[in-house]
Image (cartoon, rainbow, N blue to C red):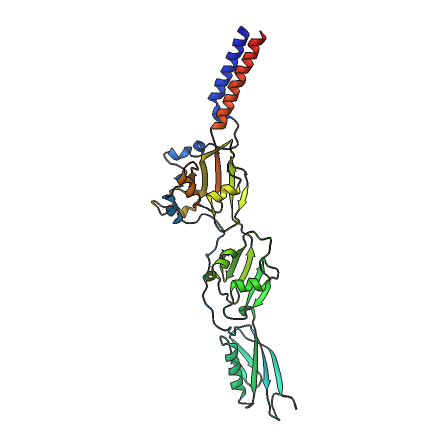
Length: 374
């Protein structure tokens, strides 16, 4: 009997030691209190904001924290009704002449083709018997009338046909992400991004949330293909020399802690809310997760830090979400995850308590068996 009591006392002491060191038990995720412990320091290294209805409009005014560097997107601005001749275009001219003794046509011939006239950098072409004519920035018909008018000095009855083949300044490049990439001449002045993508055979089927990148000069503009399809006002009119590419959406957030998955999660649509993010990572683990301790960890650029509501109080910012309140759930559904965010599902205290309860039960069970054996 005494041996059983002694065993119980020893095991009880071990349980007490385990309880004293509860914080060191093996866990798969941090506790919320551990992550936020520095917030009460004299010089805290993080700023903490509970996600509530009142916070949403404030955060919406803050600068973006991640994503592909770009200059936004260009709205639809109507172009010229007709294309215009540009330097480096190629011009073909056909001159119809009914005179018997023509300077241009061979005997019994009624027309002559003058092909491959390249528009110079200064916007001129050289026409035999006429000389240099400035055709740049004219419509093809205006350029035809100019050539015909100048041609009348040597061939009074001449009639002129003129065809323009756009050069580099009158073409746009479809770099990739479509069935038929390549250089495409602009057939009209209002040739848009969607027109170009259609010419290239449409987007590749394997692209995740296809993003449209428009390179114009030294600037890059980015938007999603879905936004162009939904809003015609965003279907930008192209300019000669533009380069367009369809690429996969490279934005992602990290999932860590007591969630259904710990991995990089790529954006599959333009915007993802905190609730969307939790769904994408398989929700919370029932036996481990703390529904009051969902953390969205975000690092803003130092220039975004501002006093008041103009920006966060610290570049390192933690947004806390409580899924046990209606305001927390609804607000999480409107709180946008930004590229590079870390969604951390913290550990609940309950698993540790359950482990201690099992340990205590095992202790007394062993003690009882020892006592019974005596």
